[in-house]
Structure formats: structure tokens, C-alpha cells
Length: 162
Ligand code: CO
Image 1 (cartoon, rainbow, N blue to C red):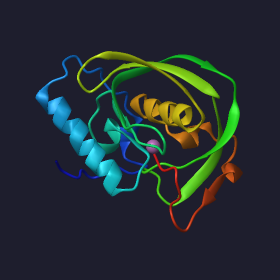
Image 2 (image 1 turned 120 degrees about the vertical axis):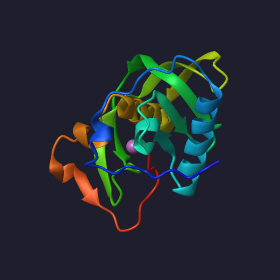
Image 3 (image 1 turned 135 degrees about the vertical axis):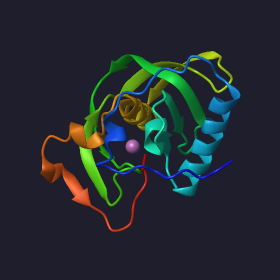
Image 4 (image 1 turned 120 degrees about the horizontal axis):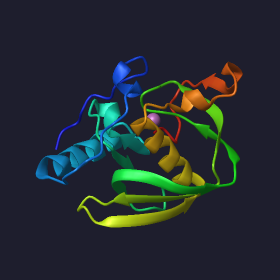
């Protein structure tokens, strides 16, 4: 396993659209393991492949009271409700912002073994799924800010950083 450099805001790779994974190969499995190690090393709650410079549709989510999710080609198929949340991003350290996210989402994806799965999520898991899947489309949480006043500087990064 290896810790990969996390790309920061301003790097154009974060604005690209990632490609679907066609084969869940050994190298994809290795990338997943490296992403898990990279996220945990940064005390993150989630990470998307473009954040480590790989334009592939792969995300990792690890939040309290949930198992670790490694999802390939994740797609939100349903979402409902709306709520205001505070969000941060490992690619945008030192800030957090208030944005709107869905209350609940249903997501389909492949697990790390290539098996099709479906996740019904609410609260933080729903928020994380939206945040990470946004990354795969070149979207950052700051794009959802209603105004710049909703962005605030923080001295110590706080959970959740995704
Ligand atoms: Co992020």
C-alpha cells in the first residue's frame, strides 16, 4: 500500500470528469487500497480517485458507525429532501462551508470485488455519497455555496473532511 499525494483546489484534475471503470482488475484493487490508506492517513471521511490524480470513478467513504465503503462507478439513482450541512474537503484544507444536500439518496455501484450493490443512505452517509460522486464529475462542494459568506476559515480541520 502507499500514501498518494492529495491534489488541492486549483489543480485542473479536480475539474475533469472521471471515466467509468470497465474491469475491476488487480491495479484497480491496488488503487482502492492506496486510496484507503491515503484517506486514513489524512484523517479523512472520504476520498475520490481524482483527488489522487486518477480520473476513474472510484470513491472511498469511512464515517462513524458505518462500514468502510469502496465503490466503483457509483451513481445516485434517487434522492429526496433537502437539508443544510457543513462540509469540508481534503482538497480544500482550512475551510468549511454551509451548503444544501439531499436528506436521503439511493446509490448503485460495484463493490471492490465487482459485485453490483445498492445503498440507501441518509444523514452523513448520504452527504458523503453526494460529495464524493460530485468529485467524479469535477464538482467541488464550494460550487454549491450560495455565497462566499457561507465559507468559513478553520484553524484546525474538522470532521467531516472529504
Ligand atoms: Co472532497
